[in-house]
Image 1 (cartoon, helix red, strand yellow):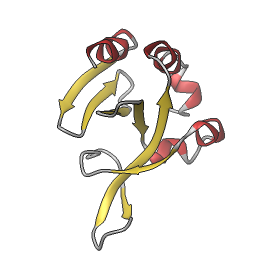
Image 2 (cartoon, helix red, strand yellow):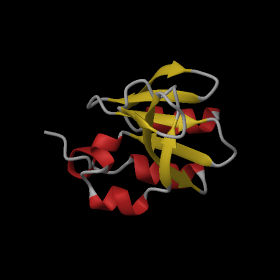
Image 3 (tube, helix red, strand yellow):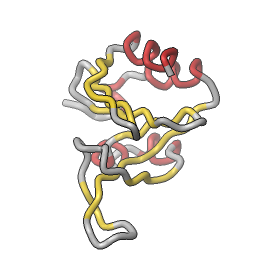
Image 4 (cartoon, helix red, strand yellow):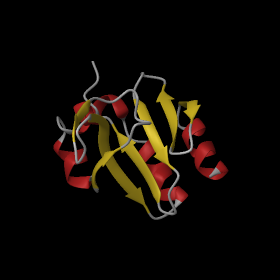
Length: 112
């Protein structure tokens, strides 16, 4: 997990919060990304960003619901209460994650 944290910091992210379920990183442009404590390398992006971007929608693995995604919107899932959610992305290696993190965030995420 430490190697993955280094990949984030080398790509202009700051670790802002760590819980048992996820690690929250903030990009220098203000975008939040969550790294999940999974065996597979999995990150979660804000649905407001992904749903407006066909490239990201096509690459996304699925939606992921988790109370630790505090900066993401909520929606109904399986329970009675609304829960925070985002779109997950899986990577085969730290190098593959690093390539994704090096994208032009302003272009891909359509940030003004």
